[in-house]
Image (cartoon, rainbow, N blue to C red; front, side, top):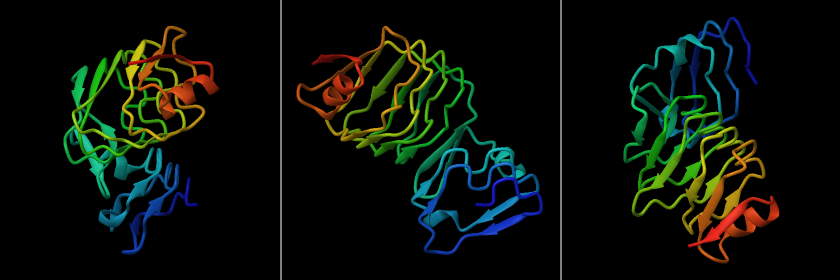
Length: 193
């Protein structure tokens, strides 16, 4: 909507704003302030990329809105995502992490969450972690990823969720689960555990 707007400096979101789309404010080269994010339930992939606002978010885990993890600025190769994070969107895209442990509060692995994190080998789900969806390109290009143990809570997978991964990728999950049906539909290796 505002992508690439060079004069936009400040955004004030209304209290009823529930969704900010993918790339909505990316490349707004003058954007320095965003108010009213606390009510946003979903922030799309790369929504604030290439903005001074985004560049100034330097904490280790950048969590906005209603528990949306949008960036990881840490240096650890083995990452434990903090409790309270409800969804991950593009936070680890292209990052040199090797393993990630997801929190029990996680409900969605959104678009581009781990895309092209080429060193990522392991994804662990904490006890009680019950995400329901894996978004577009969430794990695309994760060429070191070989085994992913998926919980039964997952109901929806974007068809590109594991695009361009290693041919050695093996998805694990309960027999008859949505994960098994997804793997069959897209010719991915699956093992019922």
